Length: 237
Image (cartoon, rainbow, N blue to C red; front, top):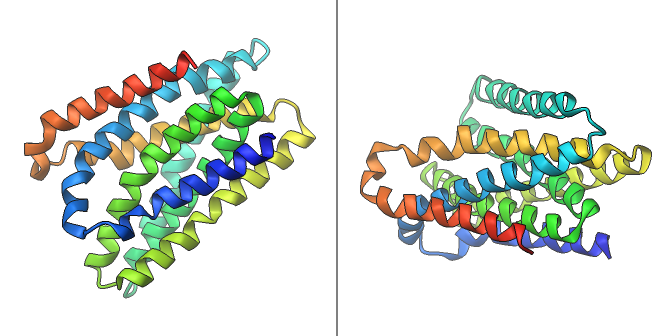
């Protein structure tokens, strides 16, 4: 049953990420800022209320190790994105960098969903909600960028769909690791916590603080609080 939950969650995540191709592009620009606020709230709440407590509970008293894994995950994601963004760029290179960074995030998302469901259906559900919540505004931003770069609607959606498949790779690696080592799920949750913090810090916060979106800030703050509320609600499931 756990495998079915994982597959359904990853498929739902991939489908939600492609919703931008079905919505009028003008509406995407208007909706992006509140969605970013909501995603930031869900990710922060899920990280500190669910992922980290579960990872620490399964650490066997080695809390320092878990926090070290979180830090290593955060730094590794920063280095990977720095390496991608620092590569020489030919025509269309920016799109490649964008999709490459998205693939890294999707691998981490697939791993997080798998590790969470291995621990409990509740944690799996909460983590899946957090993943989908941040995936939608991120993919909207990616889609808008690809379209502004001259890519056709069809090519942009197909490119994003191909990148979504990398979540399956993260799921498979986590399942294989758990089969070899019983402590893998807790460590993967710590890795996911670092990844989620990276996404908030690097991808979402700059959008929240974008001066050009200043008129949307009151609504965005409410959306962020709503995201935190969803994470808190997950504790009662």
